[in-house]
Image 1 (cartoon, rainbow, N blue to C red):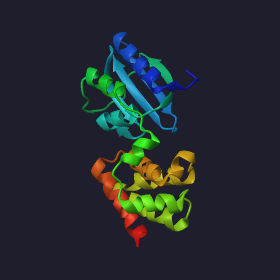
Image 2: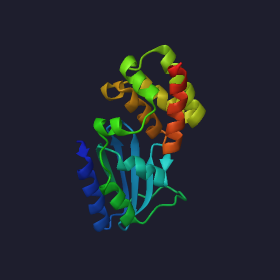
Image 3: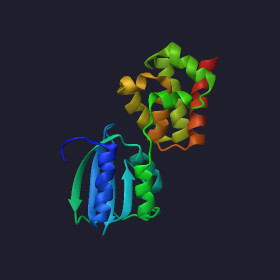
Image 4: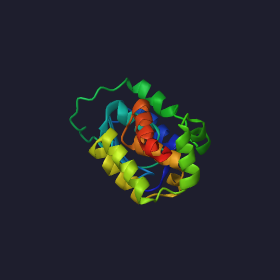
Length: 195
């Protein structure tokens, strides 16, 4: 498939493959240019991956995809993995019920005050000092994957990432950080900026 599917169209395709007892692999690329896979055996979902993330963590990432290009590989053997997944019906519910995060939603997230100050004064995140602070915090909290994600996000800083809150949340989301890990990461970045 060479055109972009909206989230709902993509979910409809996954549900349809379940009902049609599809066996094979769906591979795709998200609008943020990240690859993912969904593996089926007789309609049951037995494999999920998003970049290097697998299982339930990958499900969270796949559920947040807004646009995707899909390729189907019928009768393809699934990659070997020992991943624990919820039942296919639970996966389909999770994919179907994911709300799209909007800029308004981001403003209602409980962010520490220094982050809002940085957002209004820094504008687009381009300063060398700020970049070093973000990269150091990402490596501290997320390891080498944090460095890779920062390289990607800070080098290709698009319009959506011009908002500092959005940039920080996307870096954390790209590495699959939990809410507590995200908060710790943001706190580490904002502490030196508040001085």
